[in-house]
Image 1 (tube, helix red, strand yellow):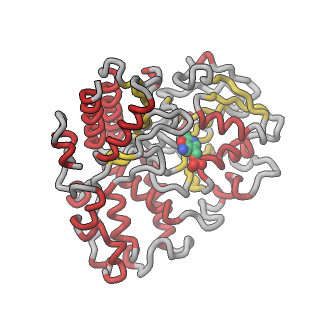
Image 2 (cartoon, rainbow, N blue to C red):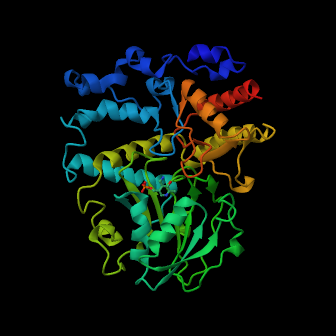
Image 3 (spheres, helix red, strand yellow):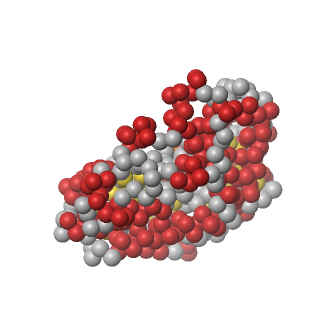
Length: 427
Ligand code: PMP
């Protein structure tokens, strides 16, 4: 892999940026012992293993020989994984892992409270809003939102359908509300967003729903429409750009997000809900989908996804240590900028179909003008260079680079160097 990189005109960028192993499979043989704790965990006392902090040299130095451009589950900060690894077997001197202890014990109680406090600090969540750690993925919220906000199936709700995910949310909501499409980007193949006055809002709607970032189509809201319904409720599926930039939470009735893109592993879904919207669920609402169940029980009504919540907590700490979301947004804008610039400067070799003003900072879809065979070759060669999971979603094809918070700048630099090199070699 390194040899292949060295033969290309962009070999400096294509070369792995640090003193890390030459090939991903070789990693286990050459990396420091911290990196293979699981295999040896039975013989290592974790009390003796210092947990690397977000800023520790171990965390800062290494990558894993691979840049993972997956759309989700997606790459997590290496420092977070190393810290979790160091704490896995013996969580902070408790003699057990956080997966093995009661969710009502003092250790987990402290972990979930700290996770919530740090998330509140990151997003400046006002006291008017509850933070809930839920299960069932963002998909479950497609049903939970109308069940909690609409009085019954004849209650109207407005949906901006800007891609596959908001379309799914709309279709699910139709079962529990009189959901209708206030604007659809389908005719334009989901490459644009509406001017806000083109959203045909029903004043009787219980809420206006948007997907703030369409993971498959790469369309991202840069600002949010004012809800024109009587109760002024805007709901956003923020699964794929949650905590990637500051957001004025007070503008939203409900924000929900599956964790597995920007803030943690799959298994936990975070909902931020305006408190006055809690407690009005339809009578048919399953207890687990009623926001009140979780709000009244501090997200501990039943056994929560403890490990996933713990990892989210470590990610929140890491984001705060980076300087919070304004800093994170700057980094994300820079990473996305060099990728879109490369596409736009390629003379039509690479094509991003999304209208420039709404291009996602998180998911960058593009095609190759030379067609699907070259896309396949591009994806296969990139994988050989250690850049994996670049295949576009099966519904749209092409290439997609997901560059969430935890994708290092070096990963994007390596990708753009590869893109230039691929173009030079395959004119
Ligand atoms: N909304 C968006 C924007 C998504 O990207 C996804 C998952 N890719 C979902 C909803 C569904 O999330 P989950 O798999 O957590 O149900």
